[in-house]
Image (cartoon, rainbow, N blue to C red):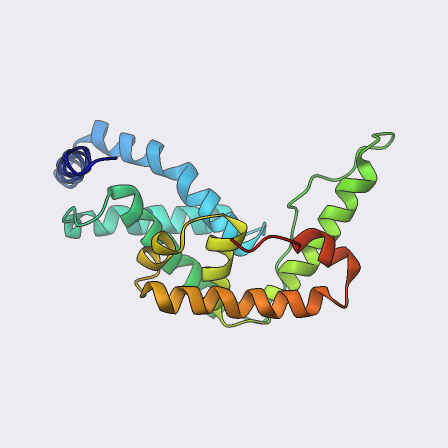
Length: 198
């Protein structure tokens, strides 16, 4: 997207935010519809599947609407929403640090399905990966999951985390090294994480 298009999009986002703040129901519905999947997907990547993800998505969206009066258009509305979502995930992880994340990254195998064993192995590898991620510092985990698992560019992750690109890269790298070291002792995990770092 060129600079002119980006500037026009930001102006449109500022106008949309202002309309939401003024009580325009159509604008509010539009923001909700455009952002709910983004929020849910981002939380899913950071936390894995857990029973509270819908509540957290609702919490993030409520925070988005509460904060709309402060939106100035310095970034795209979608980027701004992602920053809020990251903060909600961070706060959740700080509150629930000792809890185990329940995963369902891969659907349960269907009996008689030829690929059921592959999905069961991928599910177990994902469970092991998120168990490892439960052991790392929250900001490192978020940087790693957004960059390595979700495939977002480091610069975008840095913006979402309100951190420098160097800090974000170091955080993701530390977790990648930690996971890589553990994967050397776990063949199933190794199959799942090989070549994941971008």
